[in-house]
Length: 437
Image 1 (tube, rainbow, N blue to C red):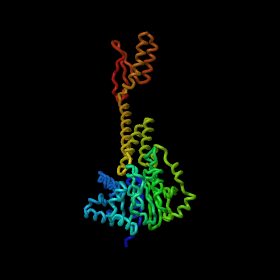
Image 2 (tube, helix red, strand yellow):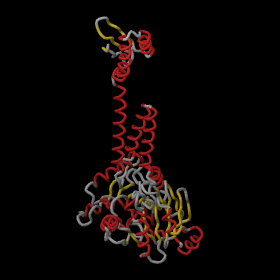
Image 3 (cartoon, one colour):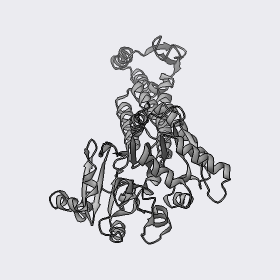
Image 4 (spheres, rainbow, N blue to C red):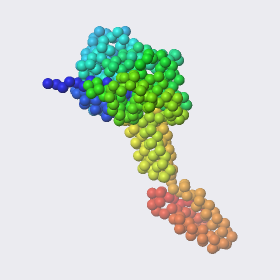
């Protein structure tokens, strides 16, 4: 008799196709028992993008190469143009899958495609009857009763507001809005925490929530794993998970494992918050300093390789500098499948090219004919020797010649012309030629 598929809901704050979440995906696929055809990517959230095929291809490549598992595509990019066969094929793949993954794109666009379709019902069945739903970034926003229209507020300038979400969190008996990218710090000089909303706009949004509703924030490169059968919540990754109600927050760091009831009980939450909650004013103080990209493992890796390169170059260790360049190139390749929301990959490429040019400058200097490097100094000494000889200061002339000889410069005096000099055999790979002075 086949064991029942566990009921798992996983929220990833970001980095869903990056090295930081590889182990999480692998563990969840193993737990869900997804066979070769048991995992699917639901592509609706990014279906509007002109490069949708490329985004899907990156995800497929990531799962195959990094996670070691194939993933198919349950394609449903536009509800208004989908043919009946396309729609039914997508639903069939969702129903058969034990592992359903959705990630980057637009929350509001995804909701428009799923609204009125059978998709929400099929996803809810996974949480009731068995299956693993992994929703990240934009897709994660749709899970709650309330959904944040990120782009409309942050990019277009709409007033902060909520949309009606899928409310899959109600399967866990939790009334909440899910906010990924909770600790985002890309703004540098301005507050982009809380999925680019910042504290001011989050307070406005929070005021629109009904009594008892919470905000569930998941940090970047962090996974919040709900096990409905065990009634537990586990936090994995680099950051933490925050439960916030009415401006007070309770945070659970990576490695935490807690009872699901902790997130369910509004009354119990308020009681515990009195001692452990963090007021919104204090949360402002926790914002990263201007210019700092906190919690960004990709860029942290870039900066670490750059530091190694600079240190090696300063010490004259060419091999170590080259190793740092190769390490940065490997680091970029490892993150190539990630759907980065910023220009970090382009900036890393520019930095890599600068490092290559600088190493090339050093190589060019080392490849120069050594005579070009020493000639100005030798010529200056020989000019002093010529003047000493012209004035019959033979001791001074001989002392200057002996100094050059000790340095490896061989002098040849000629009766019918000026003196010439050569470097010793093997110096500069034997390229030295007589120089006339």
